[in-house]
Image 1 (cartoon, rainbow, N blue to C red):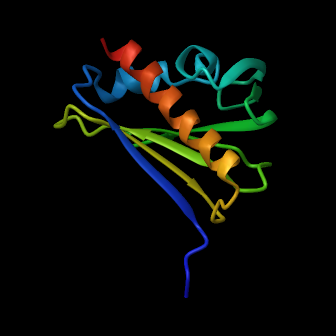
Image 2 (cartoon, helix red, strand yellow):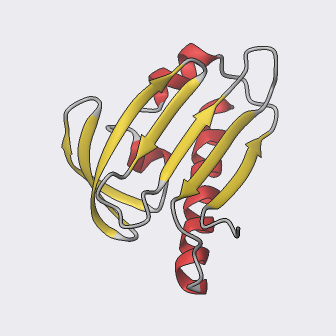
Length: 128
């Protein structure tokens, strides 16, 4: 059976943040500072909110993981999630973006790839 899930993995090398600092920086409030694909925050209730981004207005949820944060877009038709994690014994921050469908539209796929690149740039800025 063919997989219907899209998955992108990236790493930020030489990250000088521990898990606690990473979690403290990865807030809904800070999303526009950390990702140029996110224009502004419409509402922020700590672990849930509404943002305006490259794909328009979206509800976002923030979930604390053992070693990082997961942002999910529950109303997104593709169920996009982004996990940003770090093992304290590593100098890499891992970005893991998934959808529940295979993305075939090249423009949309390019926008997701740019979304991840924007997060990488923002995280690098916070790490150094």
